[in-house]
Length: 181
Image (tube, rainbow, N blue to C red; front, side, top):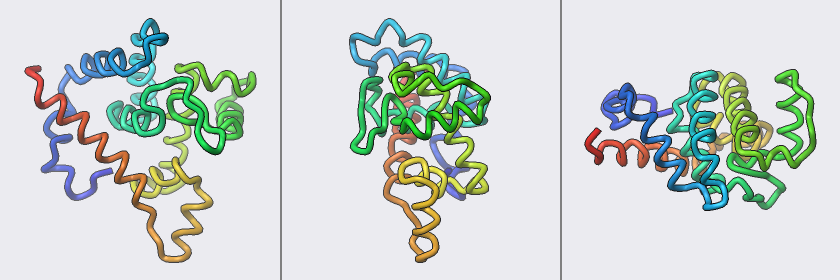
């Protein structure tokens, strides 16, 4: 995601630290609404496991969650996106079928574990579709792949949403750097 600035970034400095997982558990517990705190361990573990499964940085996934829903599993977006990763029901159904699962309806998107699994799988699919171009696949997560391709055809590179996610991503690493790990 960071391109040429990666090697000098705070991300490169801290990403190999084992205590990042401990930080993930703490952040999830702190940020989930009170009625979901009892699920914080399973939510954090799902973020870590799904990120590893799809070769994504779990702090990047948390940055997406933070920006999309502020860690609120009941969040509903302006065009019907649901849950932590703001997955649209049509995308959730499609991803479930791609993953050889059985779609059980829109309500499953309110379940944090299912929402994370589908959202991370979709991010991974978008990354492949856009040949790993971070700015494009992150933008596509927000505005859809067709909209990104339309923008590119008009020589416009979407950057607002990727910048929004990147600021949160770097902030998570800065928080870790401030702690005595």
